[in-house]
Length: 214
Image (cartoon, rainbow, N blue to C red):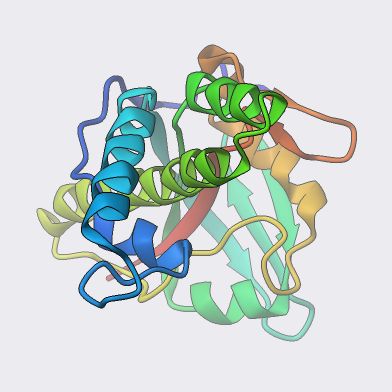
């Protein structure tokens, strides 16, 4: 699918708040309880901030008209530089009242992953786990940030977003649909690669779509 004429909104250097609480939760820690000593807490926070500094957060989004949505078959047709189709009954149910959908993606880049892998190589698995958690939570925070931007843009026309977003590989939307997201959003611009098995690298890269309703 060509993306030569699709209007893409690129967001360079996305600034998000450090989601410290969610990072600790992902690590199975509660820094408000005695299971973490003061010294350990200082070390954790230093590593978290170091990993956060390695995140090079960027994103992109676009709005695509929906031409048809069939609940029975789960086929949803979109109009973007020609037509393309996704198939998912759960996604069709989400989009049944939507006239269009916003496709978007965020990445934290490769640096935080490289640093994590170097820590693993040097047998510092605990620190590596923190870097991995930071990458995961920061990219999710970036997706939330982009979603808010989309919501602000459509609110001018009294439209609203569906209550949830949907990603390739979630529910009954096959992971192979990642190819549509990748091409539509021109993720190669961010030096993101897509494997034959539809896995993106750098791995802390997320795509999603969300419905736009009247």
